[in-house]
Structures are given as C-alpha cells and as structure tokens.
Image (tube, rainbow, N blue to C red; front, side, top):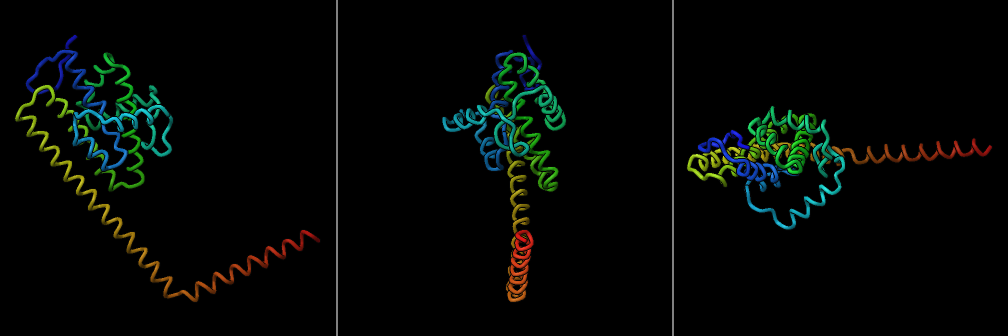
Length: 236
C-alpha cells in the first residue's frame, strides 16, 4: 500500500516510511503538561525518550482515568466521542496531521489511539484555558500549533534532511521562542498586578489595624454570646 503524503521532495512514499515518520511525530506528541515541558519536548525532537520519561508515561497511561482538571493528569480513555473531538481539533488547527492519523489508524491502531488520547487531552486543556484566561489561550494555542509543526518537521528531517527543511524548522523554532517570550511577559504582568493588589491589601491592614481588631473582637464576642444563649434555650 502506498500513500501520497505532504513530504516535500518525496512524492509517493512507502507505508513503512510514513508509519515511521508518523510514529516519531505523534508518539512524542506534546501533551503540554506545562509550558516548560512542552518546550523541552519540541526541542529534543525525535530523540529517544529517557527511561524516566518512559516510566512516567507508563504510569500515566496505566491509570487510564479521567483527569481532575481538563487536559491535566492521566490521559483519558479512548472513546469514539473523544476520537471525533480530537479529529475536529486537528482539522481546525493542524490539518496536515489528518492524513497521517488516517494511515496510522489502519497500520498501527494502538499508536493511533495513543495519539488521539493525547490530542484530546490537549484540546481539553486549551478549551479550559480559553474559558479561564482568554488572553493566555491565544498564546497557548499558537504555541501548540508551533510545537505540532516542529514535531512533524523533525519527522520529515529524519527521512530527508534538506536545507529547505532545516530553514523551515529554524523559522518555526524562532516563532516558538517569540511566543514563549510573549507568554513570560504576560505572566510577569499578571504577577505584577497580583503583587500590587497584595501591597494595597497590606497597606490597608496596617492603616486600619485597630479598627479591624475591634471589629473582629466584637464579632467573636457576639458569636460566643449567641451560641451561649442558644444552648441555654435548648437546655430549658
């Protein structure tokens, strides 16, 4: 069986080659457990996973439960509904993966299900981010797209290392660094706002210390008297 695939300069490539490229691109697909981890995965590309990372993945997948937070924790189980959601996510944000997934589904069902579970996990994490932090969501989605493209480019380079592919990979890595920087700047601004609010709260507490103390004292005494009166009525 031969499959037309979007690998520049390769034309039609054999089934074994496309499975190899797909496995590299998808078995290491970024689960984005954190921004730093996602960046590390994208940087190492097609490098062999370490023993520790393999054990971590095996432990995560062994639980096969539903994560406590959307897109966080153990990978969810494979279901037709999650498969449909994952494929919709790919179609919207990285359609180039669709033919590779289709081939993987026929040739390597277990690897396909693993890839779908990771993709669904990413889609849930990003959906949660869109609701909780709309500004950050745009950057996280952009980062996911770039990380996904990087994985695919690395897979292509393992098959046919050309100056054009190297230049494209460098360009996408540069874009990823720019997005990462933007995320750090945004995080710094958010933390600065939080620190400003804390400083204001501390200053207010210092300026009204005696008033706050009197209020808490009165509240504590009133609560005690109310409880005592209630107990007396109950005993009578």
